[in-house]
Image 1: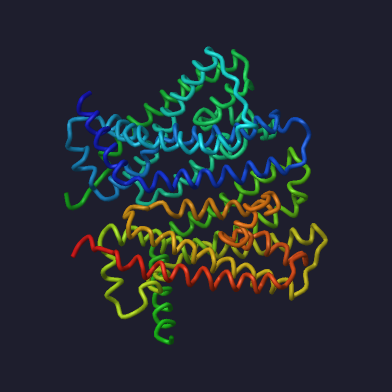
Image 2: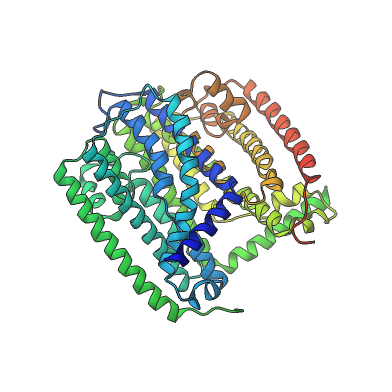
Length: 264
Length: 262
């Protein structure tokens, strides 16, 4: 395990050296938050909007800002670049460790820094919105949320890694990354709460993994789910985590055999 | 000046040749452009599934903003994004030296070197969607309104380019701001909602300082015949001011550039 912590420590140092990108991501997210908050303040609506009060919606987007940073473990970019440039031969293929855990601990290092920046940003924005924020948390619900968030991280990480591994077979995979963002935005509840989606599409959102990568802990927080539905959701998260891990193993085994690197 | 036109022609030619080399990539990104547009339309439609108006704008009017923002975004991807992204790469890898040593304006080279071609089909489709949306609203703009629309639109485009050139220039100090296009993209996405949702000083800020108003709200109002013509003059002043400020900052920054390779 010590070797993996070395990856984590190294990535903490890299993140601390190049702080600019984190601030840019935070600033970009805050811009989006300001816009959608302004939309809800100026919209003419009834008391409930898609099952949420206006204050709940504003809280939803603020918590989304923090959650977005917290759960977005995205090894896609690094994996894709390592495979495309042939660097993976030196960094992983000829080394005695698991690529999955190497990437996991590198992401952990990045998040150990970025999460504090996201927290600071969320608290600053939260201060300006404090009159509208909804706080409703009990210990049991907190436990469910922690569990759900952990699964969100595992699912996002595993799917992103699998997408990166596609570079073993295809030279250009950026479009696939776009599909991920679109799916998580719309079917994961990042752009708008899933209750806004028409009933006929609700079954799809409940079966696909994107809801369990983002919206699920927020739905628990805002009391939109019964205890049974929460358990049901956690089971689906577990199933997806297993499926994606097995998919990773399959892709890693097949990909290594199909891969040709030059110059290393 | 003729020299610069000739150079730009060769840049475009080179980019087109590169694009034709990867035809599958071109095809995929053209499709993805439509998928992203679908996401934007779906988001706004789902919001309007729950509300009747946003700051007095109906769904059909707001869709005009969505389409105009998408055209703006396409122009940014075509002419600006790739150049901005390559800036950071050049500073990091010491390749900026090769730009600075060329007997042309470095700003010209950094701003025009890359052009993308996979957005033109979407722009044509979006223009069709705007005319279709106008017919739904039973509005038939005169030629002068269309001209006003495009003039305001390009004034906004030039101002936004200047502001982001200014921000990109900070790479000289920060070295690794590889995700600057995120800010640009997210800021532009704000324009898909009417400017009237913002109040007070923030609205003034988005009109004059970061002139997001010129991205979609003002062009659409021009098309609907609800924007006074003096905004053309204000837009011109903003363009000149943002250009001069970004140019001064660029000259200041380049004095602090230290190469990474030589």
